[in-house]
Image 1 (tube, rainbow, N blue to C red):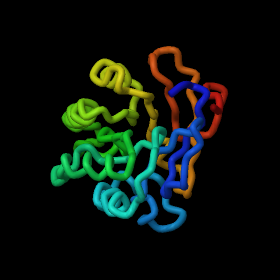
Image 2: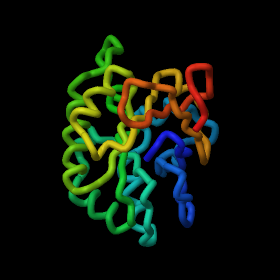
Image 3: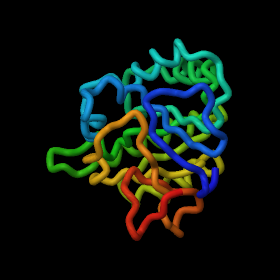
Length: 201
């Protein structure tokens, strides 16, 4: 994956993604009311991982090198071995912690809970050992370094999802914007409109 790739968040998988397109596959977004804001994806209104598993059971085998399945990594009830098997059977060899724990788990004062990110990273490391490619979704830039350090060569990129992105309306496709960031050693994207600090990929 490189900074020239086009990225998008999708609720449906097309027959075959273009080789230059990175797709985050989040079928649970289809379950939310039309016109919902992305913040709804961080609330316990949909069983995020179950929606993905239901879709994986009916997907035909495909080669999906640039597709990353969106999963809630802090799900206490998921059977991760089953998830890995269904992903492989569907031909999807990438995943992302989307939405990230830092936007889901908050203390009573609204501060992110660090234990959620640690659990996310441990589960992503487990998937990486099974040769899955990883995108890391981060609510805050301070999380970038830990993801790079822990996930190493399995990390294909970072999706910065700041709180202002949660005000975006959910669509069938949501474009990712490449960040002009020199700090991470991997491509960095955000679900935001282009500004002077960003450039569209």
